[in-house]
Figure 1 (cartoon, helix red, strand yellow):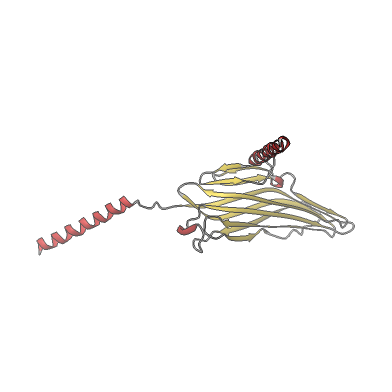
Figure 2 (cartoon, helix red, strand yellow):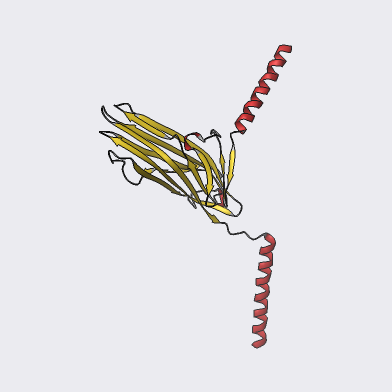
Length: 241
């Protein structure tokens, strides 16, 4: 019995330590109108996305240092990373759109190829049923320049629905779960090589203001005022008549 008690105590301590260590992975970044809650990531470098900072009030900017894929002599290479974050509108605001911009560089020699792909997915976490909307990450032009290091840019954008049950009963979207999935691929044949890497990731969340809803007392005063105006107009009409 004593050994059993010790085992239970050790198990509880282990679970507590695990919860504490997991909680240590959480981080919140608060912007002017939006807050970001990260989870399931390495606090030191956010995985392959690199360090994160806030720019222009709401924009998240990542600085990758090791997000790359290489291939040589027929051996393919890839880099895959998914970032998950809960996006919440600060009081008085609502979420309306998500825009992602990425930049990087690549170098091809011989018969080699490089690809940048991925997607962003927004999930409604306020309504009674979970809804989602996705958009693919695509480069503005194909990665086809050979023999010279060249830059690339990729984009993806989502407009959040104002209907379709998003945001719960009031259709005001205050919070979403956002997933950014990134993939780099490099391929080659004998005598060729391919390198592709990411240098920056920028995430912009567009918000709009929420019109304040008058309280019940305000409605009562408004109706009383309208009634008084109507009464005075009717009384004046009778006097003049």
